[in-house]
Amino acid sequence: MKFFCTAFFIASMMCAAPLTVAAADALFFPVPALFGEFKANEAAANQKYMNKRITIEGEIHKIDNSAEKREIIFDAGGNGADTVVCRLHKSVKGNLNQISKGRSVVMVGAFSAFEENSIRLVDCIFGQFRRK
Image 1 (tube, rainbow, N blue to C red):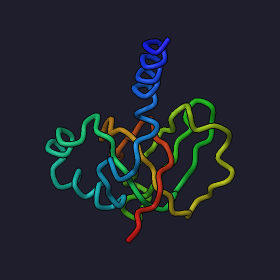
Image 2 (cartoon, helix red, strand yellow):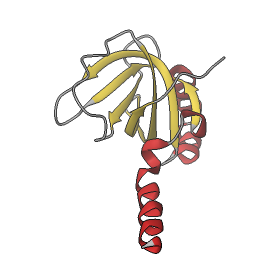
Image 3 (cartoon, helix red, strand yellow):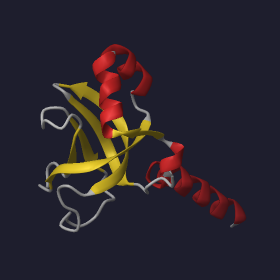
């Protein structure tokens, strides 16, 4: 019984790890700073961040709460053309009516691509603001 409980605990921790990562454990960027790194040297930034967990902080530009997308979009340049798109992890339940455009939030997700002036993060969850 002790072996079974220990094995179950270890397995559950391994499965839960991506969802319980504290914002402090991931690379942290304000949205414009992360985007600036990709604009400066896209190839180097892609190599540096691919599949790494990144924490971003910024104001929500748009929310897509459709069943097939469930994304939160940040405006990285103030022009609506340069964006960071966070596709929500399936564990983020319910609809997103509690948050709105213009609200500052922290998201933690895995970098997946930079394409067409858009940084894409997947498996995103809400993080906590850093204390200053």
